[in-house]
Amino acid sequence: MLINLLPDFLAVLQSSEPEVAYHGYLASHRDLLEAYWHNYVIEPVGPQFEEVVRETVHADRGDLRAMLERVDVVALAQATEQRCAELFDIDSDIDVVVMVGVGAANAGELVVNGRGVAFVCLEHFTSVANPTSRGLGLDPELLPMWLAHEIAHCVRYTSPRSRSNLRELVAEAGGYYSYWETGRRANLREHLVNEGLAVQAARTFSPGHAPWEYFGYARRQYSRIRELESVLARAVSDDLDRAGLGLRLRYLSGGMSDEARTVQQYVMPERAGYFLGARMVEAAVVELGLSRAVRASAAELCAAGDAARTA
Image (cartoon, rainbow, N blue to C red; front, side, top):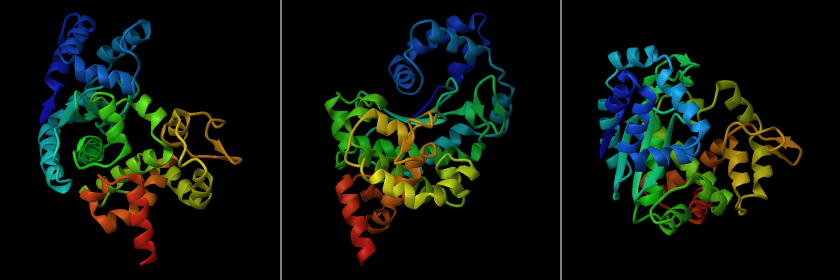
């Protein structure tokens, strides 16, 4: 189901008391927005939360309004949702959310009350970098690609046919996905193949983009990771069957220090795990097909990949 939060957010900006209005907006969509804040921003309470709200409601939105005048983002999201339903053979409840965030992730996945949620934050897709909104300046044409990436995650987490460890962890948590708890409990192999499958899903859904765009990398970062591929593959091998939030952050998160990203005297490039994961599942996606692959266990993916490479 498509959920369009854009009108409610724009109403907040037009309010005579936008900070108060934001609290009302949060209360009106509490389950969804609190999950967004918990997983991608900070706890939605306290002085730091209030500061983020102030910055959000007073940011310059000229770039956002200009983009919305020329791009029908709701139609893009609807078309993406329909195509993904066929591409992934979707068999669970997944909501697609169009929203304006607070400058955190450009897109992301959630599970709230057992329903998958794939969201995009439009402040990042205006083609203009905006320091007041923390917008990244991505082209709006990338919206469908990123939504497909997040929808693939939701299938893996919620499909009754999924055999992923992440689906088990979401079920154990009462139908709720937590970046932090799954980061602690799922092993690194599961995290890498999870992101790798989403990258491959985006490639299949929306071919023809620059290769680094599927990973959220800059061109130079992509080139560097490709140069280091063999080194990275050796370095990660000892950690694949280990679990721990630090491992997820080291390989899949931005903003980590060089020290935190050092393995065997090599400093891992930021978010190198997206590339490693995509390479890990590449042969399995060809062997199994995308719909089966996004539901396969990590062991099944590795076995299928090995079989494809030795055939």
